[in-house]
Image (cartoon, rainbow, N blue to C red; front, side, top):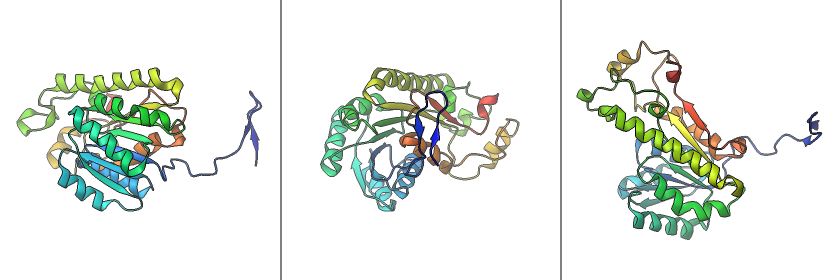
Length: 251
């Protein structure tokens, strides 16, 4: 049934394609062999997107590509902090697919390099050009030293430096969104909590006092949010930080 917006009297028809549809889009995932990157790549492939898996470990990227089902996957050995590697990544993506529709910067390293290098191709796909920068909830709230202790060998051994880096990713996201928004490019940040491969009893005890979602997070908790940001379902969403943190930011 056709619906009309009472304010603008603009006809509205429900979309003919499913919400969060990424079928046929070419999406580059950096650090694509990492825990989170590999999860993103396989989930996007299952949703019908063609995926370019870029990682400094070429063999690991190939293994991830072999696990992608539902669409084409290309593995590229590339250190995204190296400008020449990033340029080669762009060339190999164009040679294989002829276009790029989305870029997922899974790691802060190389985030700016990759965004700049893929910018011409993303701007060319005006209707679907999208960048998603993966930050961390540490950029939204103060890191909790009691749950991330350097004696455990975890990555938050230096909370101030880590939090500052994540805030930088958020700042870059907003800058790119504002600068390129008029040209049709959308840039958002996906802000997950910590990423665990499986249950961790010790970490769970340290987290227990937090107002949580009733469980610890797993790496597949974020794929739906990523697909949303890469699809037309979020077509009016840019410069945003989508926090998926199980109530972490409530205090």
